[in-house]
Length: 484
Image (cartoon, rainbow, N blue to C red; front, side, top):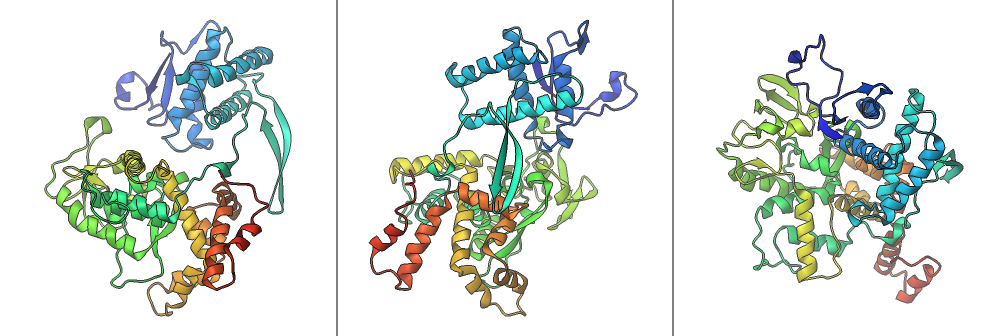
């Protein structure tokens, strides 16, 4: 069995009357004999391909997710085939195969084992596949058993089914998923090549320090997702106001790179935006000036940009809006003065997308040289860090106090009014791009918001002289479970 990525290039030579209705870039499966059906009827791989082609319209629009979905079903098919079980076998045989598969993924060869979270994700994909197959008439049964469940959250009750094949996971609060203020400061200094005391780390020979520091501060301030800042164009960065302001600045995020392709706005503080513009004007300009970079052939044809502004430009002579371009198209954009159009570049103006590696190496260096307790930092941890830091400031009224200093005639009056009138949870909901405040509230609980309230209780109490003894604070949280 082979997995390949579909491309319609040259379809006119395939002897077809019309272009195949298959999404570009869709991973497809093929048997060794390249047959789609045989004497037994349509092949399982063909059914999987039909399911895969409907993923974009069935809740999985992101091309980045398609290979994982197809690989999940393919690996399940390969496993059960070794045990003589068909993809659409009887329920009894499928349930037996699922039991063996569970043991294999939990205790089998190390490289094939799944953590509980990965296993649960795979079971969710397989359950969706079998539901689709039953609805389409390909399957009469499935390997899963369900039980009825009731969820109650913030006065709302929801009923549903729970897949019994799911494994139990550790409570979300046992692992801290964000950086505290001191660790955040340490990490940002590390990105800039500085030691925790702010001095230059002479033992570090890293490059692109201005880029790493500027983008890192932008993420911590705005909470952008990995895809959003990785494929952000330099011309989409908000304009720096002529004067410094304590009120955050609006940061529009184009729908072409957001989760679910939904336009949203976050914010960024003035100092972080100023550092970003400094990187653009100096280090980035030096890297891209006169650059001869062109995207490699495997990415597709180059997209040459002219007449670019913050909202759009001409791409190969055709006027387009940046918001309509996805990640694959954005990384092929060639700027008028040379080099990539992406905000983050390296070398001679080439697009840079390896942020996970930068963050991992920085956290490893801090842990090795300065602080053994420093955690591993992945891109999403910085988004969590922004959420917790913003919620802390909102609850303390910091943003509201800053907003009250803004006169109605100022350019940021609209955002100031928003900060004065909206509840903290609703503000954070908008910044994170959640559809419902219930999602934001659940998100905060997963980040162990108890620690946030504990910290604020101590800080505000001391600040206003409400706490005489530090021990008094501890008694308020004696009944709460310990955080490991």
